[in-house]
Length: 253
Image (cartoon, rainbow, N blue to C red):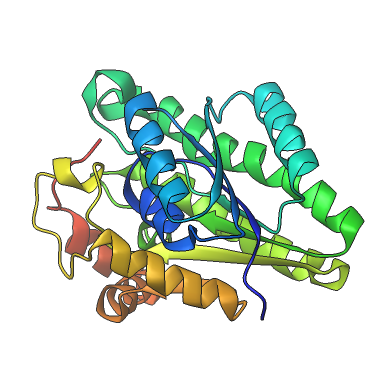
């Protein structure tokens, strides 16, 4: 399958988004990158340009549906989007997000509304053209609600189910849709986790797995296998058993 020539990535100023931008950057590729940190985004843009890519960066709030629709329309007009990666996301903690129940609305706004605001404008244009690819960033946390991060788990479960449904619905229109479910990856988000993270993976390794999965048009790109298997088991085991298993997990939100 031919590699995409025009790629849009939200949440590119850190973590997996940053790693994916670096991986896709090459001569002949146009990258549209958004993020919240101007300094990190500018540094990433310079690096990708040094690898031959044409780069356009934008500080934008993915929860603003009007601004996102306008920006994505502008990007698509410059270079018809082949691949859109709805990656921007947050977890709980800190003054910006909040703690406990106060974190619920900010997390859902970014992780659900932000994904919707990214996917819908792209889906409409790709459907009209009859081709294109969309990647939705979910998480292995989508498989079971956890007491330490209920809003985060809920947000990732929502976009996982939405993406899986969209994949089947729009396949006949030539639009390929994949849901990405990573485990623990070294990012600014996981750096604040107050607990040990099994099978923690480097960002560049995660980006390589994601790129290969997208190239093969895999519907669900879930990794690493050990954490994926554990998440799957939590999903299928009886609730009274899994409630007991997760009750003492540390709180993130």
